[in-house]
Amino acid sequence: MVLNTDLKEIMMDHALRTISYIADIGDVVVLMARRRFVPHEVEEAPKINRTPKMICHVFESEEARFIAQSIGQAFQVAYMEFLKANGIEDHSFVKEMDYQEVLNSQEIFGDELQMFAKKEMQKEV
Image (cartoon, rainbow, N blue to C red):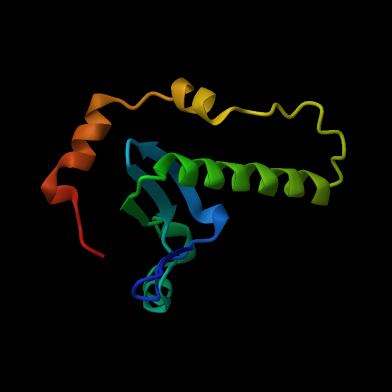
């Protein structure tokens, strides 16, 4: 959840399981999540044929890296809880990942960046 303390309003609220992408680029945090289906969308389209819609949030903060690291740690805690809930007590196979190591292992292709940069692909939500 992202809360604007000045305006006292929620700017973003997504369950951790709906988040599919998180990155920090300088002072920018990018987060992509699956959107919830609105009730009228559920009635119009059968569950099988629905394409999940994605929403992209971009926030500017001097603490962008810390924010992204915190979300990454939340994923790790949730995964450990998932393993525990499913009776997997031996966590020796789970490698503690350094956030920077994960970032360095990722590659964003130029075509993807161009797609995100196109004004006609952007939509105010």
